[in-house]
Amino acid sequence: MTHPLLAALPAGSGPEMIACAVIGSAAGLLVWWVVRVLQSEDIEQDLEWRYDVSRINELRRVSSFYRLFQPAIQLLAGLNRAAFREGLPEMQRQIQTAGLSRFWLAEEYLARIQLIAAMLTPAFVYVLFAMYETLGLFMVPVAVALTAWLMRFALAVRARRRLREIKRRMPFLLDLLTLLMESGSTFLAALRQAVREFEDHPVAEEFGRVLSDMNMGKTRAEAFEAMRQRLSDEEITSIIGSILQGEELGTPLARIFRTQADVLRLKRSQWAETVAAEAGVNMLLPSTLVMMAAALIILGPFLLNILFFGLQL
Image 1: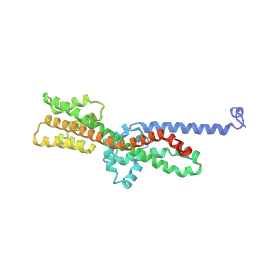
Image 2 (image 1 turned 60 degrees about the horizontal axis):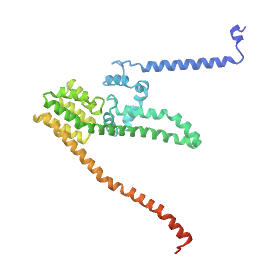
Image 3 (image 1 turned 45 degrees about the vertical axis):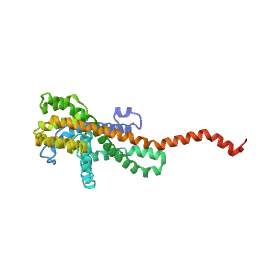
């Protein structure tokens, strides 16, 4: 005997209701899983993680993407260590130079790039199949690989841009340190004041990390050495080398900062002069083409007239 409520339903509504219930349950389960994953629960020390437990916990706090896809990132990171061992140190330096979270390892950030590129596969399939039909399916792996390469290239560009901003503002920060120390301030107090004055700028972030390292117990030489390794630039290496040498010889830091600020300005002016000298050479070919085009526009009608109708005196 059929239940009265079921008998009142229209015919064929049973499968639709079951399907709706399954979809609703799946959606609810997905939302619950995402909420649970996004919670910043620390990993216990007695689980599978060993020396980098603190780093992973901090990375889970600062990166929602890492929390959401941590198992997949860890799996791909292990493969990246074996496949891209030689290129990982340079990528780690670029991660630090670009100002990304210091808790990222190069192999993990590369895994993040690979996952994002893989997630775009359905979009590539839809677009390329609509444009080229069956041939487009063979282009999907190329599109995924190209996307990953572009994201990797964007990291290198971001690192170079941030390093250029640091080098542009470095002389002004060194001048401020010089003035503060010559007025009687200690190095730590002057550094704190300079970081506050250049707040939200990459140069303040880097010197702020130097200040944090010294507050955590590192010596001044160790803190600046860490900054040199992070940025890995010739000019900044020269500045930090002079600071460390002055630290050993007892040279006043204010004098070192003033000298290095003048050296940076001199190098920037020399670079500007070099670029200005090269500009004339670089503009030679475009200007020649423009002159040729202008000559053709002016003389073209006369030449065509002579070609088709002959020279008429």
